[in-house]
Image 1 (spheres, rainbow, N blue to C red):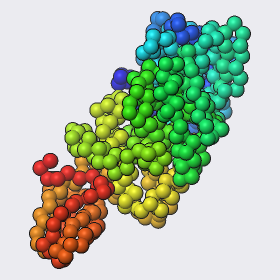
Image 2 (tube, one colour; image 1 turned 180 degrees about the horizontal axis):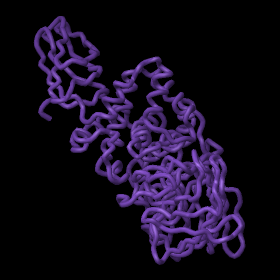
Image 3 (tube, rainbow, N blue to C red; image 1 turned 180 degrees about the vertical axis):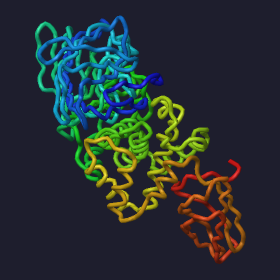
Image 4 (cartoon, one colour; image 1 turned 135 degrees about the horizontal axis):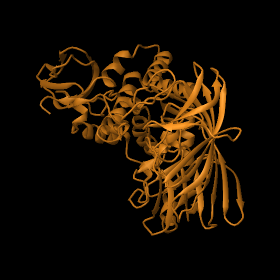
Length: 519
C-alpha cells in the first residue's frame, strides 16, 4: 500500500519508497522459533549498521506494527533502547553517537503473530506450511529492516522447528543441521541481498535431486508432485553453464527451487526460488518459468535495481533471457515467438500508451508489477531485443557481460547499464535510452507501398522516433529482398528497385516496437 508518511531522520525527511542514505545495514543475524502448524514466531535479530556521510544518532527500520506482534530493541550490552514508531518505521535511539564510517550493533526481540510477510497456510493437498513472501515491501511485516531494494546486507539464519517431519528451505547455504527434540537449521549468505530477497519456508517437503552442477541443492517439492517435478527439474545445470559463459559467475553458494502457496507464479529469491503450487501441472511442467527465474539470478538479484522505477532491469531482463535460455537449452519455442507475444500484450495495454518504463509518478511499488507490469516486463524485454538488434550480438552480449561483472553484488540504476554499454561499444546511446525507457508509447507508422518506393510516415503527435526498420519483399524477378532502413524523420521515402513487388513484410523477425497508424 502507499506509504502515508515519510521517515523522520536526523537531517531531513526521505521521500516515500526511497532508501535511507545516511545508514547502511551491513548484516542481520536472525534466530527464529517457527512451527508450520501454529502461527506465530519468537526470535531475535542482531544488526550491524554503518553511519554514512554524517554522525548517526538513531536508526530507522521499516516496520508494520500491531498489538499482536511485540518488538523490543536492546543495545549490544543488553540495555533497553528507546524507540518509537512514526507510522512507517521504528526510530531507534542509539546508546551513543556513531561517527561517519563507524558501525553500531544492536538487537531486536520479536514475539507474536507477524503483521505481514510471513504466512501459515495449507498446501493444495492439505499439508501445513509456513513461508515468507516479501516482495515488494512485505519483509517489514515481521522483520524490522531497511526494506528497500537499494540496501543490501549479509544474512545469517538459525531456524528451530519442533517437528522432525518438516524441512526448512531458506536463503543462504546450509552450515549445520542439528537434531534434538526438533530440528535446528543454520544458513548463511555468500553474497549480500536486499530484504525482499530473504526467504524462509517450513513444511513436510520431499526433495528431488538434480545432477550436473555441485551448487544444485535438491529441490523442495510437495510429496504428491514429486514424480511430475522430476520431469521438469533437469535443465538447470546447462542453463547455469550458458549464463556463466555469457555473462559471468553465478553469485550464490547454492541453487534450489521451493514449491509454496505463493501468490506469484515464481519469485526470484537468490539461490532459493519460490515456485507456485501448480508449477508442474502444465504441459511443459513450468520449464519457461524455471528459465525466467534462473535468469533473475544474474539480472535482478546479482545485479539489482536501486529504485523501483528501474525494476525493468530485473523483470525486463528475465522476460527476455528466460525465453532465450529456454530456446537454446531446453527445447523451448524460438525467442521470436516470445517477442511477438510480448509486443501483442503491450500494444493492447493502456499503460503502454500513457506511461514510460521508468515511470516516476507511481504511488506504490506494486504498480510496476500490476498496472504498469506490461512496461516492466514486456516492454523491458522488447527494449533489450531492439538493443541487441541495434548493437549486434558481439557488442550486445559483450556489453552486458561488462555490466554484470562490474556491478554484480550491487543495486544500480538504468544509467549504469547505459554507461557499461557505451564504454564497451564506444557508441553514444543516450538517445536510445531516452526514447525507449523514459518516453512513453512508440512510433505510430503508416506504410504506403508504391511500385517504385515505400513511404513511411510517423503519425504520432510527439516528435519522431529514431529506429532501424527491417523490410522484406519479393521483387518482380522472384528474388527475396531484405532491407534495413535507418529512420529518424517524420516522412521517409525508401526506393524500391525491380517492382512491382509482392509479399511485402514489415519487421518480419519482431525486432521493433511500433504501432500501425490507427491501432
